Amino acid sequence: CSFSDGSFQSTNRKPKLVELEEALLESPVERPLADSLFQIVSHIVHETAELKNGYTIVIDFNEEPLVTSGQNLQQPIDLTREDHFELAKSLANIDGALHLRADLKLHAFACLLDGRAIPGEDRAQGARFNSALRFTAQNEKVIVVVVSTDKRVSIMQAGVELTAQCEWKRFS
Image 1 (cartoon, rainbow, N blue to C red):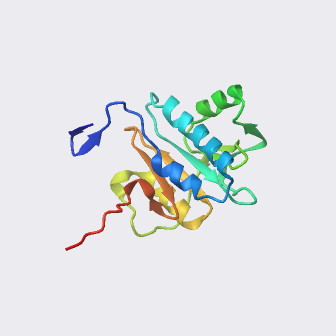
Image 2 (cartoon, rainbow, N blue to C red):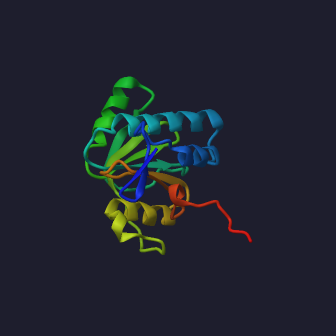
Image 3 (cartoon, rainbow, N blue to C red):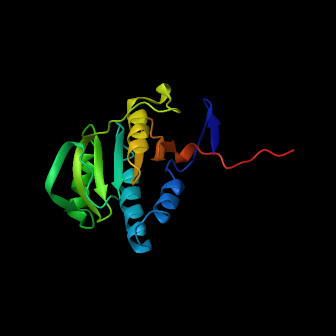
């Protein structure tokens, strides 16, 4: 690790996504399915690292898919197939979020995430970050992964950035 410009940088330049893995393990899906979701999302994040634009991935655990403004697919794309996975990586280039479900399929792309203003927003983080915070605050059964243009990865759930939570408790 190195420290520059007020932040730590990892030498391998790959996000660890530990918070995503933990959130998926605590999700309502079975362990093998959670593991598969983690593999799919982490592959998208790692293999699209060279992109110069940011993107968002919504993981939806609702019984019925959330209705999002975007390009909803009549036939969801099975992300366990390599050729479909390559298509999903390409769709990450399009402005808006990828909408995945626990069935390991891409249900929509180019989705806009809306929501009401909440405490804890940080305008310095940008619209993609704050839209994801708002969206997760209004939709309990989702996890959102935000990859910013500077390759910073944020994991959000229930209106909280999990990658920013501090577990350290002060004591005297």
